[in-house]
Amino acid sequence: MSFGIEEIYEAAFDRTRFPELIERLGAAMGAQAGFIGWSDPDRQVGFQFQFGNDPVWLGRYVETYAALDVLLPHLHAIPEGECRPAWDLMQTPEVRESRFYREYLAPQGIVDNLAVNLIKRPGIIASLALLRREPAGRYTKLECARLAALVPHLRRAIYIQSHLVRAQEHAAADRAFAGSAGSSVLLLSAEHVLLEAAPALIPLLHLRIGEPIGEGVLGNAIARAITQGEPVAVEVVPGEDASPVRVLLESRRLDTSRFGDLADGPAASFAVHVTRVDLPRAIAFDAIGSLYGLTTTELRVLKDAVDTGDLTAIGDRQGMARATARTHLHRIYEKTGTRSFAGLSSLVHRFGTISSG
Image 1: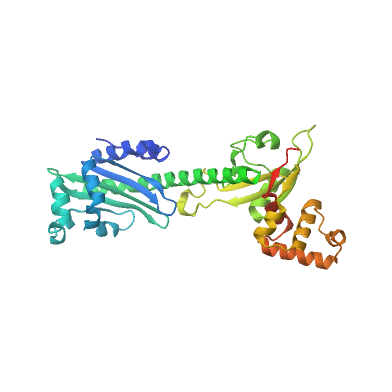
Image 2: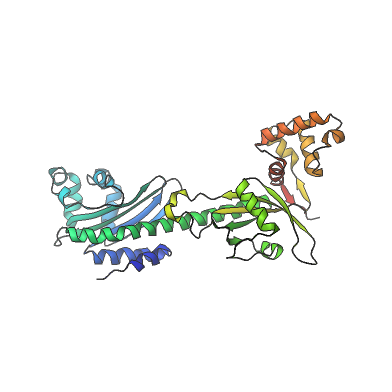
C-alpha cells in the first residue's frame, strides 16, 4: 500500500485523522498492529491511537504485564528520532526466558516491534511502535530506512498537534481571565497579526482579524505593552463622531519554547488584555488591603491615588507630607509586586466590576 507524506500533515491539523494515519502507515510497513501517541505529563494532555491490538490483551498489559515488560527499558533508551527494530533483542535469553515473553508476546505471536521515540524532551514525549506477528518476519534494513524517512514529518505533526492544544489552552485561559478581570482579550501572532479578539472590541477599536495591528495609536500602544512588558494606557477615538475610549493594555507572552521551529508559527504568541478604564467601577479596596497586608494609611493612599490619578498631591489631600505619601506609595508597590502606577492601577481594577450605574 502506498503512503503519502501529505497524509501526515492532514492529521497534524486534524487529530481525528490520526487513527486512519497509524493504520495506513502500519499497512504500508507490513505491520499487523501499531501505536502512536504523545503526552505532556505536566499538563496531562495528549492522545494515543492504535490499531490491530486485541482490547483484552491491552487490558492485561495495563493490569499485569506493563510492570514485567523487559523490552521497555531498551525502547526508552533509543535516541530521539532513531528507528530501531526489536528482533535481535527478542532473540536474547533475557527476553526469551522472561515471563513477559512467555505469557504476553509469544501467545500473541509478536515477532518484531519497529519502535521510534519521536520526541523525548521536557514537557513532551511522543512514540511510535509497529508490531509484526507470525507468520510475518523481521523488519529489513530497507523497511527501517523507509520509516526513518517519514520520522521528521511525524515529529513535526506531533509538534503541530501539541502546539495547537497549547494555543487552545492559552486562549481559553486568557478568555477566562479576561472575563473575571472585567477586561477583554486580543490574541496576536509573533508578527503582531491579530488572530482573535473579543467581539465587543472589534467595532469599538476598529480591529480586523487576520491583519497586523498597524502603527496607529492603538497599534503603537499594543507594541509598547508587548516590548516593555508593562501596562500601557491609551485613548482611542473609535470614529469621527464617537467619544474617546480609554483603555489599559497588558501583554503576556505565551510560552512556545517547547515547539522548536513552530514557535513563530500561526498560533498565538501574545495575549493582550484590554480593560476599559473610562467606565465607573466599584473597587473592593478592603479586599486588596487584606490580601496584600496594607495598613489603614496605605489603603487610604491607594484609594486616593486610584480615584484621582494624581500622585503628586496625595499628601496634601490626606493631610501628610508629600515625602511621607511617596513612602507609603512605594511600600504599596513593594507589597503588591508592582513597579509603576500603571501596573498598580491594572492590579486594582482586577478587583472591580463595571458598575451598572
